[in-house]
Image (cartoon, rainbow, N blue to C red; front, side, top):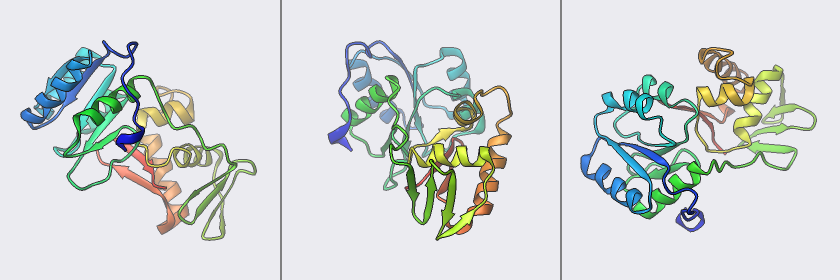
Amino acid sequence: MAADVPEVTEAERGGMVLVVDHDPAVADLAGLYLSREGFDVHLVTDPAEAAPAVRRLKPDVVVLDLTAGVSEEVAGAVGATPIVCVTPDGEPGPGTYAVSRPFSPRVLVAMVARALRGHEPELAQEDVLRAGEVILDTATRTVTAAGTAKSLTATEFDLLAFLMGRPGRVFTREQLLAAVWGSAESAGTRTVDVHIAQLRAKLGALSPLRTVRGIGYAADP
């Protein structure tokens, strides 16, 4: 992962980064390296203070420690703000903006830079997207699982295509509402949960959809 992360550009320096980590030593280390690169860094080591800090500071990027657990209140406060997830020891990162604990400070800085510039994996150029035995054809708007055709509503298809086109990346419910429904305010976040449940029911055990507790959803490759 370290080989393909971008360096910090002059334009990105000065962005506000909120670091939420239950370990003060780790938070201080992250803050030190981010500050050295010119970021405006704020540290929170008490998870209960995370949501109020997000609302008060309105950071450009949130570095979020998942080892201590993240409440729905925090995820809701973060909304569409880019998140760099710090995942537990030995577990793979859940998406583009992720580092695994213990992390390299240089990689963390680079991931924050990537999140700040709004880098996002583009929807695959191919018409056909694959996740295990699930195949989605964007041209014909058809989906099969282990060769069996699945009947999806237009919204279910769009949601699945959005996630499969960005394999591994975690999106909050607010981000999915904005991307698939067109507005994070036109429908409640429960709408996303309902559609995810419907997709899982239709795809069964082959479903690539994964819940990241307290954050949102991703599609595994």
